[in-house]
Image 1 (cartoon, helix red, strand yellow):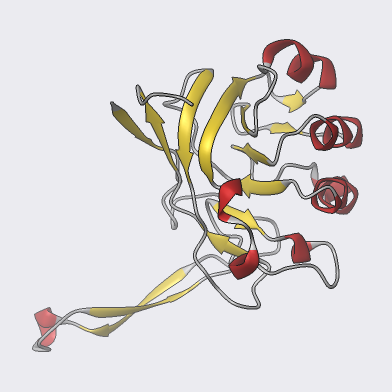
Image 2: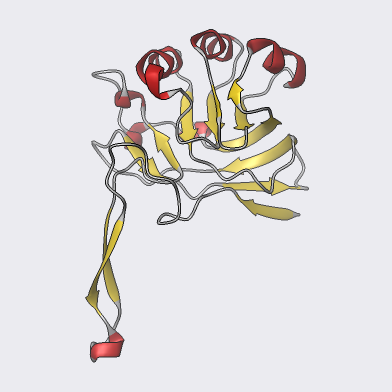
Length: 197
């Protein structure tokens, strides 16, 4: 069994345009005589590897604390594609039928179109993840997210899939439970060599 960390380090990950970078403030330090170390983290909930809740783009929808955990734990399929817009035909041909969780490895530059979002939502996939900072291009974030969220498809963004080949894995990527938040950081892992059910 092999565990593959598919999370980006919080401070090294690219920052989404317009967001502030994460900051770590030292509150207590043993080097200065305190009896323990303590730090305070300030970060946008969409910093680095993170999950989006349905309320991120759909008003009145559930927050990240209410997102069903089955979106983030279970079998998944990693699909390696070229950078650019992923086409529905690629998913239809290369992703095994019955796949519930799909992670797209596109050299950090692959996005979905509205057509592909509709296809994913219609074929039984409950989670889609990407190694780009969003599942959508910057000029069409809302429509693609709304298409997925209205069909109960969860989103994980800014994954590090560099060590994962195309194929089936077990995914463990539950977000931090934050009531009222539209997203949360994730420590995402793939398990290779575990019996896939």
